[in-house]
Image (cartoon, rainbow, N blue to C red):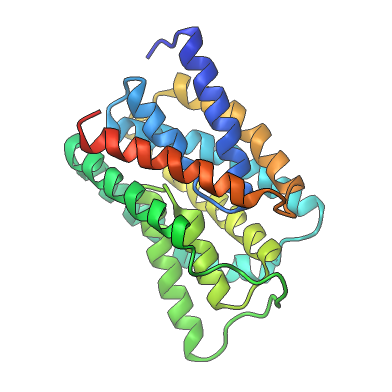
Length: 252
């Protein structure tokens, strides 16, 4: 689609903010995905297009984490196979759903995630270890990663919160949890983008504009990992996605 100057500026700004939010915790797609719909993309095309920004944002965050030697690669190797299997299934599922059904499902996800952020019952600890789960817990965590991969392939929005909840249960500290999350999301987003691109579902113009902002925002977000002002970010994001959800429920 062709974009006017206002839409370009909105997508760049949303991408920048989303990239920073994703690097710090998660939820950036809760801004960019509804915005892509509101500028005129069909919901399923917006869902596919949104992954371009997630991909470039993931590159920015992961490279920065890697340079600071903050990524526990044992966890990445452990989590990658089930996550990749899940994303292939989830992306296929996203290609089967209609626009109306997807829009209603997105509205539900926005409302649930807004409630999650208001309540925020689970957060990674500030101190922890990078030890992998042992015994039967290894298979439970792998099963959870398979499910997260499926969700990431299907809709993506809010996936960061789910990853952080899982890693909190595994007693990972916030920095390590974010580093692993960004690395896994980058890896399985590559798979999703390839599948969606092969199916011709990506609007490359809108996707690359969002991606430009998201790449810069994600790198900045890592530098702000100390989370100063995170409560303010949480409140603004919550209010925004509630408004988006209301518009989706009322038919945009």
